[in-house]
Amino acid sequence: MSTIRTRAAVLRAADGPFQLEDVELDAVGPGQVVVRIAGVGICHSDFLPRTPMAKPPIVTGHEGSGVVVARGDGVTELAVGDHVVLSFDSCGHCRNCLDAQPAYCTSFWPRNMSGYRPGRPTNVRDAQGLPVQGNWFGQSSFAEYSVVAARNAVKVDPSLPLELLGPLSCGVLTGAGSVFTSLGVEAGDSLAVFGAGTVGLSAIMAARVAGAAVIVAVDKNPDRLRLAEKLGATHAFTADTEDLVEAVKSLVPGGLDYSLDTTGVPEVVSKAIDVLRLRGVCGCVGVQLKPLLVRPDQLAFGRTIKGILEGDSVPKLLIPRLLELWQQGRFPFDQLIETFPLEQINEAERAMKSGAVVKPVLVPGKEDS
Image (cartoon, rainbow, N blue to C red; front, side, top):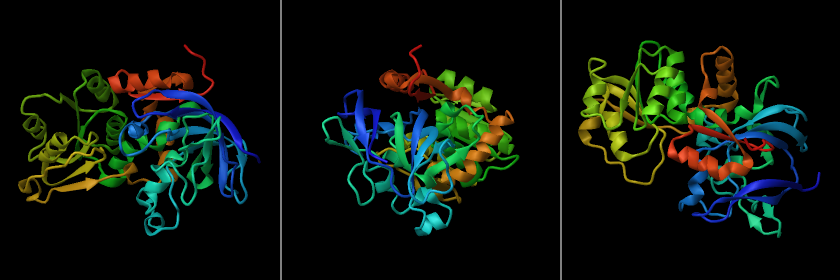
C-alpha cells in the first residue's frame, strides 16, 4: 500500500489554533493497521504541545475509534472492516509490559509523547513534504485516517455507536481503572474525587459500580457537581467550601479510605491526602510541573500517595468491561460527551477549557450543526 493522504488538525504554534490541512502518512508497515477515524475525544494531554513538554508542528489526538481499512504484514488479530478503539502505545516486551502494566512501558515517553516513532523520524508530512510530528500516543487521531500498531487497537462490537467510544481509551479508562484496578475500591468503601472532569466523573461511575458507600465529588463548577451526583456521587462540595477537609472527613468516622486527585494542583493534592483515614490511599493522576509539597505528618500514620498512569489498566481487558457495564446501564459514560465536526476543533477546545463541555468528541465528516 502506498502512502496515505488524509486531512488532519495540525497545531503549528504553541499559542496558535489548530489548522485543518492535507497531510501524508507513511504506508502501513508490518504489524500495523490503517484506521478510518469515526470519532476522537479531546483530552487535556492533547494540548501539551502548547507547553514546553512537546513541540509543534504536530498532530495530536489520542482517544480515537474507527474502522480498519487496511492491514500490514503479520497482522492476524484484526481484519478489514473491524471496529476498533485505539489505545496508547507500548512495546509489549519490556518487564512492565510483560507484567501486564503497559502504561509503565519503559519506552512509554518516546512512543506516546515525543511525536516520533521509536528509531524513526515522524510518519507525517505536510503538503510541502515537510515533517510534522505525529504518532501522538501511537495514533495522532485528530485526522480522518491513522496508522497504528495492531496491538494497540481493541476490537469492539460493530453494533455499538463507534464515534462515541474513543474516550474509553484514555480519560474514561484512567478514571475507571484508578478505582477498579489501582485503588481497588470495594463494596462499603469510601472515596473522595477531586476534580469532576472526564477522569473524575468516570471514577465516580466506577465507584458506584464497585458498591462504594460514600462517594464524594469536589469541584469548583456547580454544574459538574450536579452531574457527579447524577452519576453516583453521594455527596458534593464546591472547592471553596469552608473547612473542606473537615467537611469531607466528617462523612466517615476517622476519614475516608481512598481519595483521587485528577487536577495535579499541589494545594488540591494536599487536601486529597488530608481527608484520608489512617492508612488511607491517595491516588494521583493529574500532571503538572509545580512542586508537590507534602508535610511529614501527612504520611506519618500510614497514608500512601500513589501515582497512577492510564488507570494502571490493560486496555484490551478494561475497555470491553466498560462497554459491558454501559450496555447494562451501569456506566453511562456517553452522558459526558458532546460531538463536534473535526473542522470545529478550536471551538471544541474552547468549550472544554471553559467547562461548558466535559468531553468533546470530534467526528470527521460530521456536518456542522
